[in-house]
Length: 270
Image (cartoon, rainbow, N blue to C red; front, side):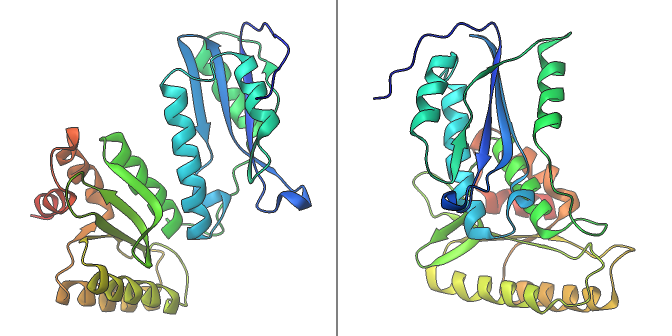
């Protein structure tokens, strides 16, 4: 156990840093925890699609950050001594800075927001539109907001999926995501990803769902061609698909975690 000296602070913050290779000491700020008192704690991270483009790394980070947030919500890390102890022992890809005092000007929330934007630089995606990573950010956030137990970049058996929704006592749902709302010309990668999904679900037999953002006014002819091709594959394989615009509809049907995702998708698509 790491013993820290007792520190008194009215409000404090700690910065979460991500270092893919700790030996190279190239950590980046990806989130903050701000604590005002025992009743006020605020945790926020950058969208994972802006932290790393690699699905496997997103999955590892998502699991770590989701557990950390759960512990914060359960009342842990509400004093700087707890944070100091944790910061002292973290030597992996996720690190914490030592707690620092925060001045609260106006409301606690306003001060916390301002601190986040000053300390966490969110990388901007190249080009307009909604990329796959951003769509996956949105899908995971919506599922969790309705109480669904979702893991990003998670495996079922030997196969990785964009997201996996666990239904206690039942078969998990493998979720795929694709967005055609970009100016990209080369869609071979998306076709390979959808092909991998279709092969994988035949091997591990999960429930299935695929979220698709259709082409928009900025999309290329190549995007439209691939969109038509992969949605035909999904339809022929019997995979339920849901347009990006209908995410709130099936999220509402998941309220309380009482419905299987496949049921929610069917209801939203009907």
